[in-house]
Image (tube, rainbow, N blue to C red; front, side, top):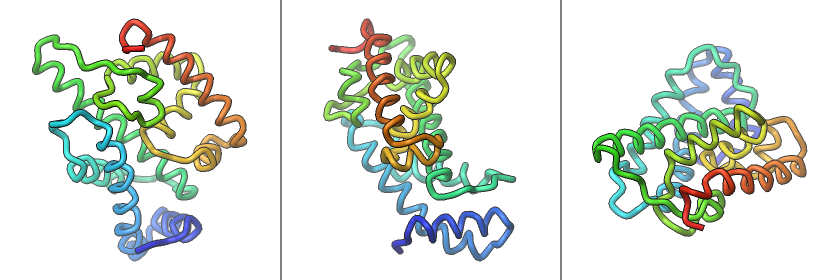
Length: 191
């Protein structure tokens, strides 16, 4: 089922208002979109990654449906929250795999490639997450832009809508954050 962003926004707002029928109509639409985003992201993971696309989507979906008392503003807001959840799931998974290896390091790749939803495989999500937390502590908006674009797969326009800035500001923040993260991860990422 294809739905326009406006239709998704209307369904999200109706669901926020307590209309169960809206959730029933919304589920196939957002599930397919989450699956598309997760599939695109997982395509850039290392071969043999133990977290499968379906498991990632199901976990994100279950957490989203379980969220109570959210006043969904629009489609971009929903997928912005989805980006946060996907990031947490992927990073938690990466951390647990690392702890199983007893201190083993993840495979590092060029952050430039990773931030562009890389052509290289095996981005070190734990190091990226740690650096992103540092960035967000000093510049929350730029940290959010990276999270929305990289983990959420949002377009520049959708990111601008969520962050409530112009698309030009998003592009400026994206370029700045990418350079900052490249510098921050310089010792951990293959340049």
